Image: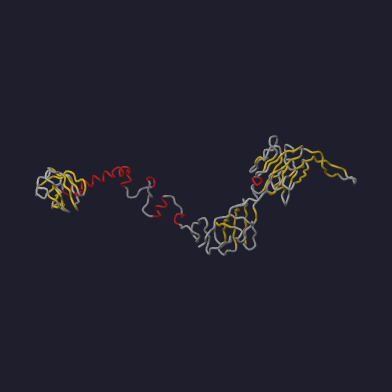
Length: 380
């Protein structure tokens, strides 16, 4: 038999259909349940609008009273409450269950339907096509998957820490190859920490490597398109700031502006290290280069124009610079002269412009570009 609801007290008014409760739980009853009032009269519950308010039918017939006892009998009983609950469940989840289709009745959902196709972890990984890395932890210990910054123990601030690692280096790091620069090192070493191989990438755009014994192996610089340039005759040279002097519009060389070279006026192109430099033709065979500190302080400075196959020199260059860094390049025809001893030697002929099938290479000194320091890494 269903239990009565009688929590709290009610206030009723003669001729009024609204019953007000205090400490009541009218939300537990349903429309159609029976309300037994303080007058012992029987009424039908019409609308349990809240825990403290309910409407009855007919309107209250007894004398008005406050704080009186009452009773509500769930006439429809538990079957109705169960039906209400099931109906609510169907309305809330029915569409979702219908959308699952056959998946809602399967014990093991196959991969094709969004499941793992298995009931064990190993079988699920196999079903999803996961390799053995799926069961490894991340970290620098043996058998783990490395993360950026991971290093083998013991931790140290040197680039020859044993084990595989990705690290930041700077000019306080053992074995660093460049002063006042920083970069990233990829390290693979034997567990004893004395032998291995390292690739070091500098923030300055350079690349170094060493292998073998850390105590004996020196960092070797890798020459690439960023730190070498190809001369007019095809020979490779260090690509410090380079300007190529030639008429851009009439040049027959399709490789005049290769890779990082960009126009630097109508009569020259400059690589990325010489960005901002300009070349101006002053007269036949005479060119002005501005925007640098002047000619390179060490190593080669100018290279004569050569035939594309590198077989012969097409002219002779002379250079000079002023205190403000302005560089003047002059090009002359090559002539042969006879010495008093009957020897033939090359000499300077008439001025000439750069041949259409070549260029003049000029190596400059540029203001130093500061590279930002790497972020500080705190070791624990």
